[in-house]
Image (cartoon, rainbow over all chains, first blue to last red; front, side, top):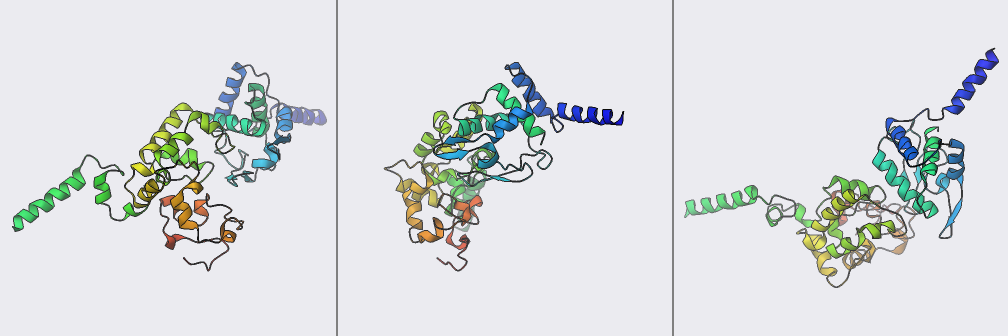
Length: 133
Length: 185
C-alpha cells in the first residue's frame, strides 16, 4: 500500500511539472493553447533547451550560449558578455511574472537561436520545462 | 542704478526658474545649470534605460546624432541589431525612439554632445566606436588595455572603465581601467 501511495505521489509529481507556475505563466500558457498548442510537454522542452544548432559558425544552445544549464546560476550572453540572471523561479522570483517580457524574450531568443519564431507548442513546452526547474 | 540692477537680476532669476521650458534640454536649464552642461544629458526615460540596458550599456542619446538613432531605432533594423534580435513592441519602440531623437547629440546643449554633433556632421555612425570624437578621445589608450584586456574588450563597454558612465559622466578623473590600476591620463 505504502509503495502504491509513493508511486502515486511520484506519478502526480511527474504529471504536475508546473510546480512553480506564476499567474502570468499560466495566463501565457492559456494563450498558447488558444493559438493551437496542445499539452505543454516539459520533456520536449528540455530537448529543445539542450538542442545544439549552428548559427554563424557558432554552436548555440539555450543551455550554454546565454543561459546556464544550472537554472540556479547566472548565465552569460555568448556575444555581449551580459550577465543573465538565473532562470529558476525559485532563485529569481521575478522570472515569469511579466507576460510582455516573456513574449519579448521568446520572440528575440527564438530568432537569435533558431533563426525563426517558435511555435505556440514549442513555447509552451519551454515554459513547462523551465517552470519545473 | 542699484534698483535697476536688482530688477534685472530678478527678471533673470524669474526667466531661469519660472520658464515653462524646464526640461533638461532647454536653453534655460543649460544656462542655469553650470555643472551638468559639461557632459551628456543623462538617461531619464525608464523605458529607454530598461530596454537598451537589458543587453548593453544604455548609451546616452547624446553620444550620437539624431540621424544615427533614426536608422538604429527602426522596427526592421532592430530585428537585426548587430546580429542580435532586439525587436520591441510598437509602443515601446515609439517611446524609446522619441527619447533618443529628442536628446540626440545635435539636439542637446551638453558640451560633449555638442562636440559629437560637430564631429558627425558629415557622417552617420551606427556604432559608438565609429564616432570620431570618441575615437579621438581614446586613441592614446594602448590596445592591450582595451581590446587585449579581458575585463574591457571593446570601447563599446563604456562602463567597464568609466565608473560614472551611468550618470553620464565620462570625465578622465572617473576612469579606472581594470587590471591597470596605475594608468593615469
